[in-house]
Length: 304
Image 1 (cartoon, rainbow, N blue to C red):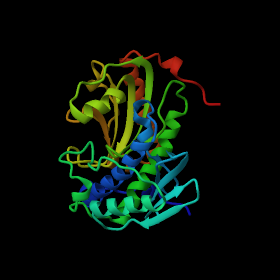
Image 2: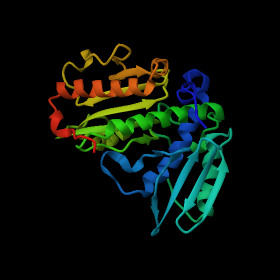
Image 3: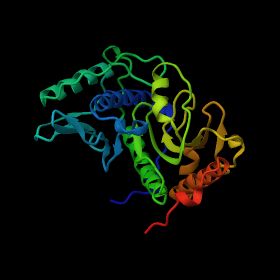
Image 4: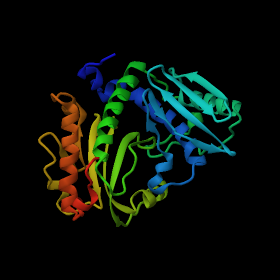
């Protein structure tokens, strides 16, 4: 089946699906914390991330007692599946239910395939976190909007993959971070950096997330600070003059986020969204990396 451009890049007004977004965010955090608990550490916290699949998101392989398991979100058929390496599996539907209810059901299904893991049952990277077992506020699940969001994530991941392709230096996989609920990728210059000094949990996260000079790019569906879906780029540490870089006619530096932001709605209305997004990424990278004094030529390699 072939989809139209409007179906591949559908509208995603933040306020119309905010309740579903907030609920799904908490569900992915519950699943993500299981991976965080069991997977061995990888630089910049890459071990915690999910990956985009042909139907949704996956944790990828998680080790457990000399075996392994995988957890998949299917956003076409709207279910969650747990599959183990000793051929045990459980599937349950994604339907409107509270975070507390989802947490209980998910943990029950894990136990039913003999996976027993204790996580810190409190969300992270969100203001005013509600413990999962007490969260009866978030209970929406609009299948149509979830599928719209996933369609955008899938198309974005395909472009991000191509953007990553010619970079021969260290770069992250294109991955989904459930803490901040964004799809992202990162290029590294090869130089060390001093992490920002923050207190508490965010300080611990940043200690390992921002300990190398990097150019980050991503897509997120919006939040209360910026209530619309958008693409972003930033370079850490931020070089002098980054705020005045010309990122394109429809992108601009956002003081509140300290990032360059390209609203998704502007992208989807262009004639060729994939080409427009690639141009935004390339232009942003080249200007930012040049400003920071990266050895751009040595970090690029021709695609075979």
